[in-house]
Length: 112
Length: 116
Image 1 (cartoon, rainbow over the protein chains, first blue to last red):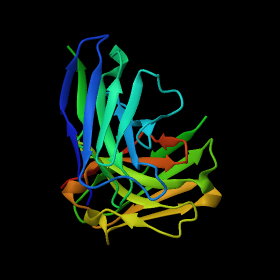
Image 2: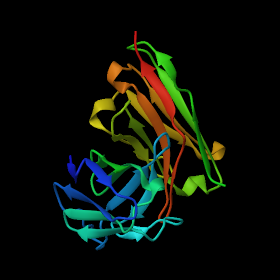
Image 3: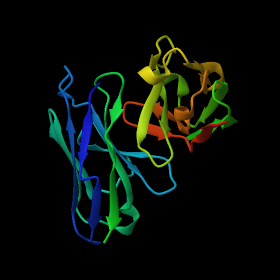
């Protein structure tokens, strides 16, 4: 299975400051069509997950532009340019280049 | 408005069975890959099963192979997960998830508790 490793697992951030989450895969997530088969999800407390970023760098509809995704191959980053109170929760990366699709362990973002 | 509504969760003894259902509305169900993803209490997300728009293929995580069956009825805009020989470690919230090219939908989840 493709192992997804996130860091840090806990991320205390001051309101208005930037935040960055790293995700590393055990093998390349670049598909033969050139796209990168990685998504990012947010799970607010008590809610279902919601996709933020698809294919590594594309924001889903309705996602604030303070969220951005980057990376290629095996190393990826989710960045929040200025953290707001509503950003508290868990963040997961997920690969879908190989079955079974696998998630990272999750990164818990909290406000300092 | 897009909706995925799961049902069928509950308390079951080890070795028992449950069938989860997911009713979809607000999108063209028969063009979406559909999945079940679960989350054990206080834990992360785990993909359980996956099926294409026509239901012709089925993919399972190793831990549920031979025990769980994913299937869909496109005429009823519904997805199902038949769970047999349930184990304590299957205890989780089970989410129904739809995958489009540019969109992604999650239900609110249904809790399955396997305990004696």
